[in-house]
Image (tube, rainbow, N blue to C red):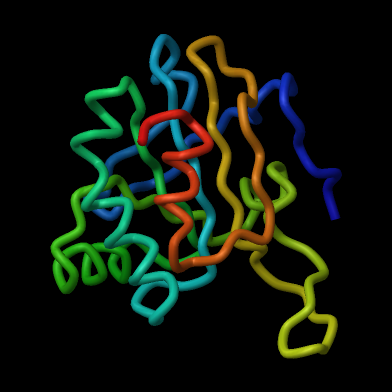
Length: 156
């Protein structure tokens, strides 16, 4: 497993395909703060709750200068169905080979129902305007995470 990122680290750059089939590159967003969050699978209960929470907060996050990118290993077509089904407004990105997950330390050993498994570690990162990690949170909870993140960022 890749080492975990901490405040001040340079955010690993990436280019991934969105649910709309567009290429999104993190470094193209320099000058803006970006919330990058990793989730295990589109259209599952916890991931749906988290994505809906981010969508509901997107206008206020953007108003505070943040863009939001959700990343999973799902194919772009599945992400498009997820967006459509749940009326999501944030950008969803596909990392099928898990390279970006690994670069951020968001894939590796974790406990699932008391058993150690390899998988996606639900994680959220805030990347500052210069491309550095401002905040790194691992093993976040799907429910209530966006509200906690807003508090951590001083937005509530």
